[in-house]
Length: 193
Image (cartoon, rainbow, N blue to C red):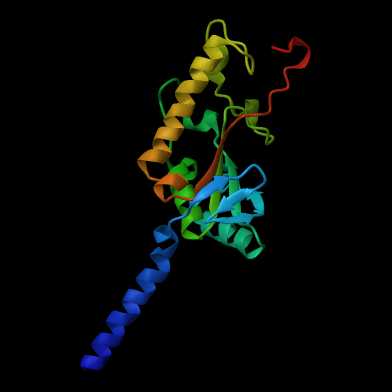
């Protein structure tokens, strides 16, 4: 009887360790002007996109596992401003918009995350991911060196970065986010501003 209890306890411990291990691994990520260096070794990372609002939270674990089984190391996702801030200062991170849960699911699978905060989403997404209310901000000019645009963008970016930090999701905090990016897709056209 004692052996059975010990075996059950040992099994429970091993299962807990197995399921928690991706969250316990500390990772050091740097860049040496030639490559990304993870835990002292140069790495070539294979990344693929999963846009969390296009599926339900119940689907995320399976989608991420399939990506991992296919050889990916990194899950890249945009952060969709229009779904997270549907009106100024009112945020939504519920259901399919639960970005923290999505990133934690990536971590649970033992993968890294690349967070593309936007603000522009080049993914066949309504209004480029900009919230509609943004076009009514006085003096705004999208995707240019424009103070009203930069102010609105800064508020959203700080909200997302703060949210990720509060859940320890950046690599420097032991989380899976090894890359974080603000939009590089400018395309100013003839204005060149």
